[in-house]
Structures are given as C-alpha cells and as structure tokens.
Length: 51
Length: 357
Image (cartoon, rainbow over all chains, first blue to last red; front, side, top):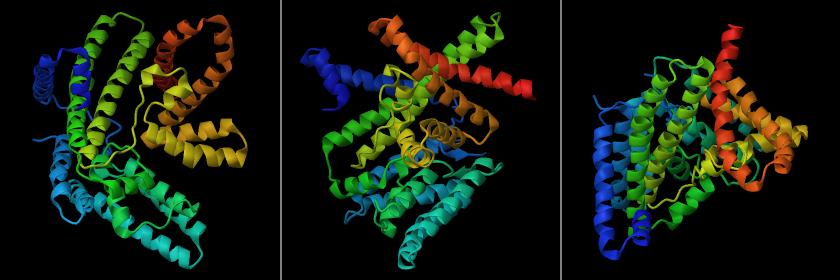
C-alpha cells in the first residue's frame, strides 16, 4: 500500500478507498497537465544556471 | 519548445526502467552514464568538468596515499572545486550544471577521505554516486556512505516502487500546481490588494508569499527526486521535516533543506568552531557559506548576517518569552514569528543596498 492509500484507508470505508485514490490521482494528473502550460520561473535550487 | 526542467524530469523517468533492466546489478552505473549524457546534451562544458572531476578525484586520492600527501591533495582539490564553483556561479551566457550540489558532494568525499572516515572510492562507485541522476539537479546532498549501502542492498520492492511513483506525482503537484500556479495567483491578488499600502509592508507580505511558494516548489521537486530514487530502489536522505512546526529559527534551519544544513554543520560550522572556539564564528561562517552557495553577491552576504543575527536574537530573547508567554501561545506564534523574520530579510536588505548605492 502506498502512503496515500494508507491515509485514505484510515479515513474512508473500505469500498470507497480505491475510487477515492483513483479520483485523487486523476485530479492531480489533470491539474498537472493544465499547470504545465505555464512556464515556471527559474528557481535558485535547480542546479542549472545560465540561458 | 520543451522546457529544460521538463526535459530533465523526462530523462530521469527514462532512467528508471534502465536501472532495472540492465543486468549484473549495473543499473545504477548505467543511470550515472545516462546522467552524464543528459548533461553533455544540455551543456558539454559541464559534462566535461563533472566527468573529469569524478574520474580524477579517486585517482588523485590513490596517488596521494602512495606519496603520503593526503592533506596537500585534499587542500588542492577543494581549491579546484571552489574555483569551478565560482566560475559556474559567475559565468554568463553559458548553461552551467554542477556548480552547486555536485561541488558539495565532491567536498564531502574528499574531506571524509582526508579525515580517515572514508576509503578511496572506486572509479565506478564515485561515478554512480556523483552522477546519480535523480539527485543531480535538485539534491539532496546525499552522503556516499549511505548511498553505497543502499546500492548494495538494492532489490526489487513493489511497495517501494509504487510509493516512489506516488511521491513523484505528489511532488510534481506540489511544485507545479501549488508552488508555481496557485501561490503565484495569490501573490498577484495580494499585490493588487496592497497597491495602496505602505511599500515596505507590501514588500514584506510579498516576500512571505514567495517563501511559501519556494517551500512548495523546492520541497515538491525534492519529493520528485526522492520518489524517482525510490523507484530505482535507493532511499536517499530526506530534505524537509515539517519546517512549519519549527520552535525557533535554529530549529527551522534544521528542518529546511536538511542535507545542506547538515553538510554545512559537518564541513563548516564544526571546523570553524574547533579552530576559533567560538560558536558565533561557526554560526556566521556556516550561514555565509549557505548564503554564498545560493548566489555569490553582496545581497547574500547581508542575508547571512541577517539569518545569523536572527538566530542569536532568538537565543537571547527565548528566556524572556519563556517567562512572559504560555507554552501553547509560544508554540502557536513561533511559525508566524519565523516566517516574519525570514521574509523581512528581503525588504530590509534591498533598502540597505539602495541606500548604499
């Protein structure tokens, strides 16, 4: 079991764990694709300097 | 055009199956070579420097042992690394990789060897440690002893693999969605809201917002690196330990970017403290190294003074707060006071620099 699955198993009844987990993954993936359209600024902790 | 960060993440993801399908337990070595190839693609001078430094260091250590010249070689190598770090930080118009995390890892190996805590690493061992793809671009500054132990014990573990995959997803969500998009939108809203406010207070509030964004972005990217390493069967050192629960500034720095803080504690704070017998000198030297490691500029020299001063003030004022405030209130106010101090640095230092200009 992954940490998120363990957390959901503690909070939800057993039949809801897998759908909730799938929903959480799908929501995160979808928002990542939407957010990915924005170009992130260079942050100081990424060890790539210059242009 | 594909962003550089996306390209790097894709290359690290490609290394995961490579690690498991290359036979004879050479998967991590293969990932290191892939790492070098990726760097060569992005920046050939960086690849030449990192490849050369990784191969030359064990050879030099071996020769220095034969000639009984350990201290001399260690000093020479640290000077070379320092010069390369400076050129990486100060070069413009050229993509430089390896100016920061790579330098810290190299210094860790050479100093531990000089102090007799580490035998000369093999060429393959040093290569897989120094160029371990998931930790190459955002850290953590992991230690070779733990890494070699992990490589030896590495075996397929389905739970570890899928937990790593989940951590990659959560980390990417934290960095891209929360740190980059949501907090940026909050920042824009805050900027509009405070347009009429006192400029100093506005800059302070925006600086606090930037600290929150930095946490979600950096901790998220570290989670991606740690998750990908876990998918390769390697458990790297954690870099964050709930910094919002810190009790004071010193506690905060022990919870934020832990691998850098512990590096600085081992290789700067303790030696300076041993030489000077002054914890204050050790603290300032450690903060100065952290500051200049971020960026070589006068801003970061002042930033180091600010952070060291904060820790000293915190220590001096603690007994007073202990007497005046109840424990629960102190605990509740501590994170706000810490964020307040950290974010106050930028507006204060920028104004000091404006005055000096």
